Length: 426
Length: 194
Image 1 (cartoon, one colour):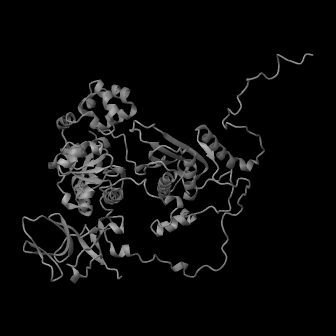
Image 2 (image 1 turned 90 degrees about the horizontal axis):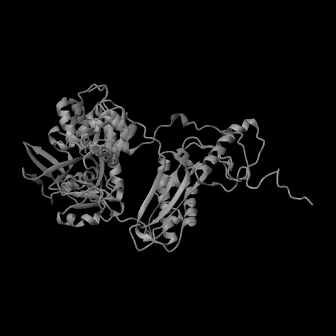
Image 3 (image 1 turned 30 degrees about the vertical axis):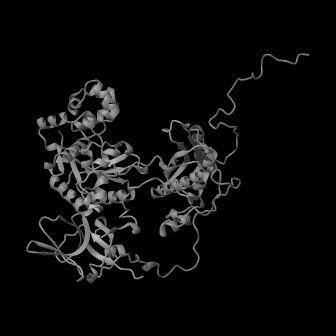
């Protein structure tokens, strides 16, 4: 195995459940499940809940009995809390390597190549610091490729004897072979369910089968991506660290409503607030959008009623990031697509065709007495700057309504780190 | 009279279909100064791609008649510059003053009067740093049997006591059997007067 590169994957253990435990230590050792938006499905489980056989992604009502019988603690997802805890964890990880890729809310790759430390000790101190500073437990997998680091992470999680840090490159070849036999091919990073099915058909079942298969077969079956995984598994690094996240292609802001909505004004309230959320995201990423899609769906699971999907996309002549343009536009589009008489259970908007927020001149409407702005573009929008300072106090008229659209989150813990009114009480 | 031609001329249905071009509408030839070509072409390309992708094009602004070309892009400053400009410093920021380890610092709210002697009142906000070592004598957030409490930590010869700072409250002596976790060290208290 070549040792020219060295990666670590740091993965938080059962991240959502762990965040809940930081602020409710009495949940330590108890089974916890976290539900998706609107309390629909299981999106996270503690080890104890996994042991009870509660599967990822199943609808809550299907396992409700199992949950009640075993006193499983149920929480609605608390994304403000998880997001804040995630950024704390990621910033601490960043102290341990100059090159970091934030791969997901609870996973991060770092480049360890050329660091003048004993890597195992370096990573142990990372692990201890994250645990102590934030309360969130993490495991670290080390390997000469990202696929190997990911595999190493699973081992670090699975066997407590490694104390949360495992370097797969230290394994002698015969042990490495044995290890690959114990993992299904679908367990490898980059081999999805469809790819695994294809491989199973030609009798490639374990990771070891994949490892010793002919590269030509892998490439024929899975294309260049499969070939990359194959080579990474053999220690040739093909996927490097992406420090700069790729520019977002689109921003989606959608919700299942707490109650089915039929009324135009109720829908308009929901979509206005969703648009504002999306525009805030747009501004945070310093992007501008050229298309806006609005969609509303009825519930496809209700067999007695017609299944209605209404949506429309409009484009704009210039990319914009201005909520005072986008919010009325959402209402306009909604008016175009809305049909009375249906019960809509889900809706949302998509900002598409995103570009970096430098102003392109609009040939068709040269209303250019507004000076091209330099520096803070937020100055252009007084509503935004007021809301920044005064905690979202100015609202569009259409944002106010009966709030029937708001999703159910009956079991949400407090937003301990992002809301003054919901601090931890001691 | 021979007024019908059945050969020559345009045949019906021949040629390129109307509105079948890149713009799906009638086009017109115009003269454009060469210096403006570069700035006009991109907009036309954008429009073309929007037509092609089937995305409807709406004009974002109502007034499309006027075309004004900016002559000056920077404003001329009038008046004296402020003499203080050269002496500007960052305003005082309580965060940098009160928080040493941002990623390990949490705010919690005090309940009860057990720490009144240490200046912690009901409803005060405590700044808690989880990264600090809980030394004897520090005020800490402790978890005893799963419940949070704020007390002063005393370690003496291996005995750990969580001391209240109010004679009406009893100290908590931690036995070997009790589960004690020091969650964080209190570094400041924020007390707001009504």
